[in-house]
Length: 374
Ligand code: FES
Ligand code: FE
Image 1 (cartoon, rainbow, N blue to C red):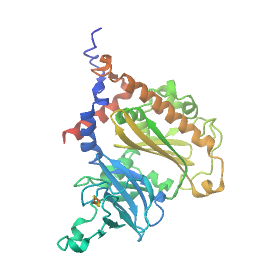
Image 2 (cartoon, rainbow, N blue to C red):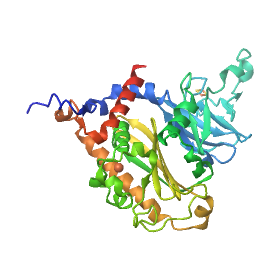
Image 3 (cartoon, protein in one colour):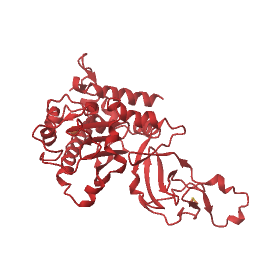
Image 4 (tube, rainbow, N blue to C red):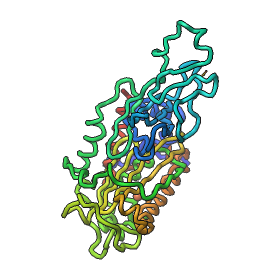
């Protein structure tokens, strides 16, 4: 069977199958996209005391994010300046006073300075100030610590805050949710056997909603017609008349966030911040996804459900609320994995097509192509 070679001229082609499987392209995306942009690394409150740290891959680098004794969050490349060993091997933990490399015991302060090394007196020429851990810029916004490993980070205001505001039609309504002061009520980590671009593309369209999201379309009926692009729900998607809350069975949710004013109180907003954050706003909670590519065909997605602190501490039942988007996530990631399975087929060598309600995915493909060309 010959592979299809062209598509109808009125339709836009997708990326070819190779874009989702090629190891060399994935490395290039790591360099040109994930090492070039601001990445949401951790919920700030998870690093809640001096010495609390987390390590994560950002592109091809590994970064250690640590809270200092002065309360400040700092980030460093997780590379020992002696012989280049990875300094911290754990994913998270608490460093007592210092960060010590496990190879020859060079020791760094929580501020990254080289404070000690065995036989240091025999190395009078070693300029300790020149051999600290290499710092990485950190910004805190919406209660998350964002890092950027680029030599010259792009403007945080433009590429992160501006992207969110633009998705919401230039309004500042996100401030009403006071996301910084919400608390994690539930966190679920998904190990998805799919390329990161499949996950973004899926998040951007709702052509699939009627097929795979029965619970979501019950609560958000406009998603059932396939035209509402989640990427563009800057106007907010209205709840079904009979839905009392954003829950798996449409029953009432928990206490509404006080800053969420009339007009937004029965709506769902979805925002994508390229390349790895999706935010959903509903009246009583926020669903915050962070995506971490692991390989061309594997991506870890960490999803936080954020509520008012008093709701989390009161022990109110969050299950019906969490269950709705947990199911949506599973349905979406299953779909992405189905696409990944077929991405190597000759039937998809030239890619497929974007129907009109998916055309904005074409803009994402243009964005990726532009980043790779930089
Ligand atoms: Fe870290 Fe030698 S490589 S102390
Ligand atoms: Fe979906």
